[in-house]
Length: 178
Image (cartoon, rainbow, N blue to C red; front, side):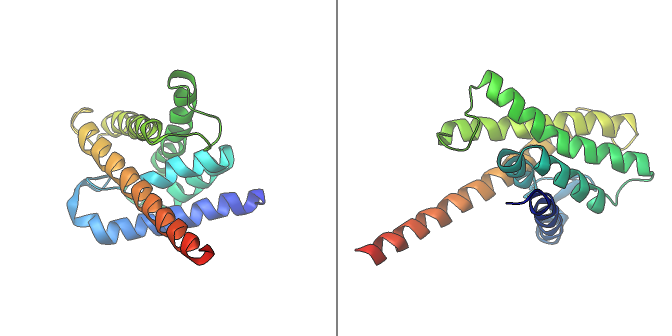
C-alpha cells in the first residue's frame, strides 16, 4: 500500500472513529478529554502495528483535526504528539520487554492483550501529566485510571470484534470450499 494511503487512511479512520465514539459514548466521558470508552485507541495501536511511523504520522494529523477542547494551538500540537507517540512507545517497549514479534505474525492473544495494556498505559499517563500541567486536571492521577480503562476497553472492543468478524469470514469461506 502506498505511503500516502497509509497516512491518509489512518487519518480517515481516526477521525471517523473519533466522531463515532463521541456520538455513541460522549455522554459517558469524565471530561472533554477523557472517555470511559474510547474506541479510537485501537486505531492508535493498529496503525502503528501495521504502518509504523507512517501510521504515527496519520495519528498526529488525525489528532490535530479532532482536538477541539484545547485553548491554544500549542496544546493541540502537544496532544497530537502524545496521541501519536504513545503507541510508538508501546510498540518499542513491547518488542523489547515483552519480546513481541516485529510483525503481526505469531502475535498470540496473550501478547496482544499485554500490548493493549501497555498501549493504554503509554497513552493515559503522559496525557494526564500534560493535562495537569496545563490546568485541565487538578491532579495528574485523577484521569489516569478512567483514561486507561477507556483506552483499554476501546482497544479490546475493536480487536475482539475484528477477531469475531475474521472467524465468521473464515467459516463462510470454509463452507464455500466444502
